[in-house]
Amino acid sequence: MSPVHLDDERAQRYLDGLLPEPERARVDAHLATCADCRLVLDGCRALAEALSGLPAALPPPDFTEAVLARVQERERIVSRERRVAAAVLGAAAAVAAVLAAVGGPAAWAPALSRFGAGLDVAVTWCRIGADVAEPLLRALRLEIAVATAGAAIPLLFALRRLSARAAAAAS
Ligand SMILES: [Zn+2]
Image (cartoon, rainbow, N blue to C red; front, side, top):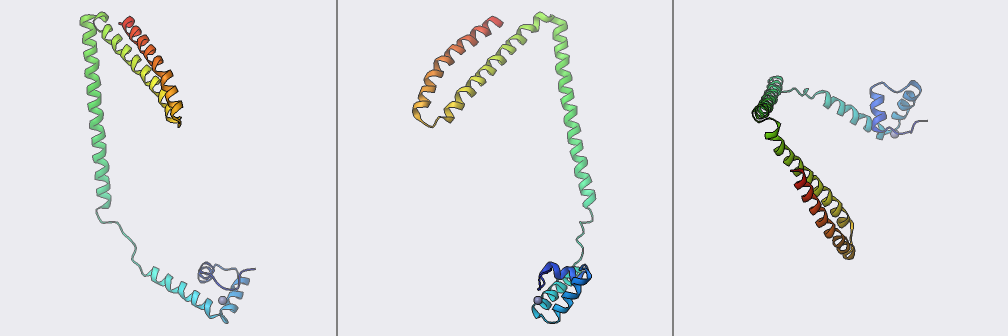
């Protein structure tokens, strides 16, 4: 059973002819006796008329051309960046090929090895930093922070010596 008085949604459905027949007859009978619901219905009718009188919103005349121009400009920039990246990679490959041809593997292998060792040390230090920082940040009490630092500092020095030895052995 529908409520007696009309709300906005039921009034709109009534105006749009969407209420099924037994309910529509009940609303008709109610409207004959209820001024409040006639006001709700008049409000919905006035709103629908006002909305139908509004002009449709249209994009500016050059909207499509402006969007397409921006898309093409973006594609030009991406294409230029790809060409530059390919040129840089090609030049690097050419330099590496010339070095390999002129000096053989002996000319560039030590530099590559030093780079690899440096990378290894950097990764080790990042791991150590993360392992130490996380417990410190979690520790809210000063004693725990001090104990962690006290345990970590000798460990850091030992690991640093080991890293230095590994780097020396690699080069
Ligand atoms: Zn009513």
